[in-house]
Each structure stands twice: as C-alpha cells, then as structure tokens.
Length: 181
Image 1 (cartoon, one colour):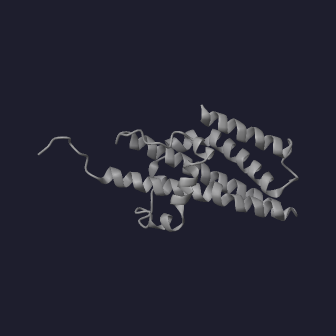
Image 2 (cartoon, one colour; image 1 turned 30 degrees about the vertical axis):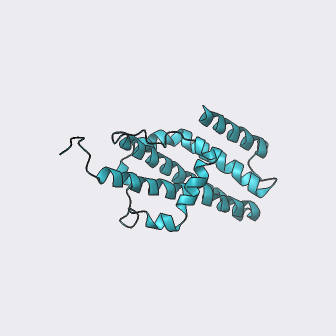
Image 3 (cartoon, one colour; image 1 turned 180 degrees about the vertical axis):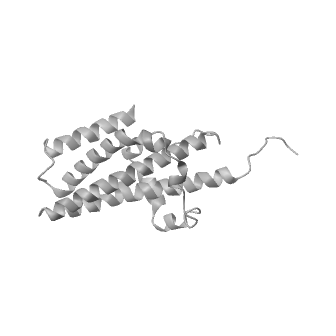
C-alpha cells in the first residue's frame, strides 16, 4: 500500500511541477529534471516492466569481473543501497525482497532484471531528451537532466547487478539437505 502511495505522490508532484507542459522547460532546472525523469521512468516502468520480467535472463548476464561485486563496492553501491533502504524511495518496488527460500531466488532475479531493464531504457530516453535540451538552447535543463541520471539510473543499475551477483553466489552454494551426518 505504501508503495502505491509513494508512486501517486511522486507522480502528482511531477505533473504539478511541470504545470501540464513539458516543453519548453521552465522553472528550476533540477526540479524540472526530477519531474520529467520521474514521469519518463514511471511511463516506461508501466509499459515495459512485464516485458523485461519475461525476457531471457542471459540478456542481463554478469561479466566475469562483476560477479564478485568488487567493482560495485568501489563505486559506493553499498552506501547507495543503505540510503535507498532508509528512505521512502525504497518503498517504490516491494518485490525486491527475498522471501526466505532458494526457490524464490528465480523470481527475485527476474525482478532485478526487470528493474535493470527499466532503468536502462529510462536512462537512454532521458539522455536523448537531455541532448535535445542542449541542442535547443536549454543547456541548464540538459545538464541537470544528465546529472539526475547518476542517482536515478546509473546507481540503480549498478545495485541490481551487484545484488544479482550476490543471489547467484547463494545459488551456486550446495543446498543443505537438512540431514545430519
């Protein structure tokens, strides 16, 4: 319930802040960029998340240098994860929690693939939008839009990949049979 509440608040605030028109950009560049970014992200999530959930998991496979997660630790993903879990933004998708069984790992991996796919697509669309702003003499808005990509797309993508490596490491361990030997 709080997930839906958070989505409604962010969407309503974003629609209100752009005052019903997206172009030309107006108002504070950072607030405008956050609002447009949220509206693009929520639209892409609604339209494509089910598709990304069903896509072949090999599309989101990890490179050998990602599997242990060291690269993401150096990038500060743990701090981002902590901030996400301790803010209302962590409420947006409650499906990113493991429900305590190895069997649930497959569902969680698909949720992470879907989340990563949505962030990749959102990132591409908003970078193209930012380039459009830069080309149409709205440089402040374009640069703000590019800056917003870091915490709203780049770090979530890295977090999904880092978490997927953690889940794969758990799945690679032999399952305990529960029988004492």
